[in-house]
Image (cartoon, rainbow, N blue to C red; front, side, top):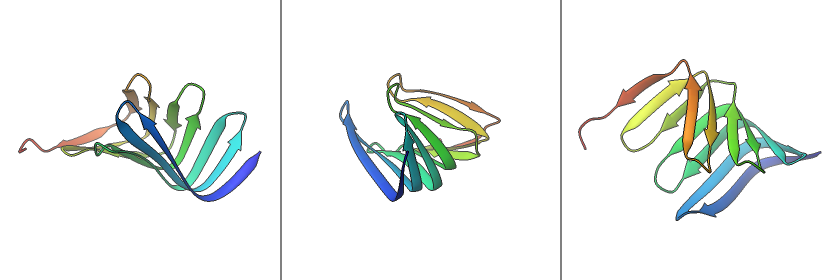
Length: 104
């Protein structure tokens, strides 16, 4: 496996620029394990932050079994774990608490 430090990877998809950042990243068998200050950011303002995120490169899925914060321009969601399918644009999460700004 390959271990990397202070990693930032940028991708372009369907008009969005996406980035993955982490203090430490380990790549093994097309699975990228991100640790420390980890985040997924998209150019439209969507951000996912956690202490540990796993990126399944072939299926383009992000998984975290650690607490996370998901935010965009109008809301913040806190939860215990998530699975985000980047291709489908769907996320499933456990034990969430959401704050939504209705003034926009």
